[in-house]
Image (cartoon, rainbow, N blue to C red; front, top):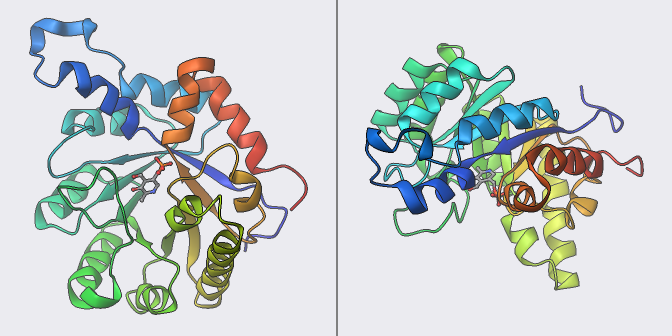
Length: 257
Ligand code: PXP
């Protein structure tokens, strides 16, 4: 049981490091060798030295950022836990079963979206999502569902026996400069976490969390892990990844909870 003084864990999403690499080296052949940069695996290893608790990657169907080989290399080298974000497709289920990450987070995937825009409609696809949850959990991969903080989605996750959910914090992040909307989104997150705990699900959260809005996110009681990508990778451009990770971990767990 997580208590209010249990530190929140940090999963670093390294997709944006791969996005930067792909911006220049999308079509690079083997002859480019060590020129191909930045390497997301090297970023993950440095982040681990600074204290991240896990590494998250989204292997998208269009392979726009993370590539298969990145995930295979991560599986071999990281010391923490690998969290594979994946679409609910047969191809991704096969990939996950071969890879055996510690965690798999089921996400919706649209080819046109810039990043994952809304939560998975688990309640609307109970059979399909439930079957994937069962298959992955049976093979020792702990599933999480990336869902909006809506009671019917959280109840669906409980019915499917998903041990984790990741509550989508994007609506909160987008509403940051509208005080009323922001408080209302925070309240939904708080209620979502409460409901998840009542139903025996461990709640994570992620999307759009940064060095500013973390001040409110960290006050949500009983969050297990935050998955953060863009903000930490952006800060690393100036400070380096180790400093960027240490600063976020410090802010996540400031005493005033
Ligand atoms: N969690 C999930 C499920 C995501 O899809 C993403 C990014 O797409 C993140 C967390 C991280 O979001 P951000 O890059 O905004 O921190």
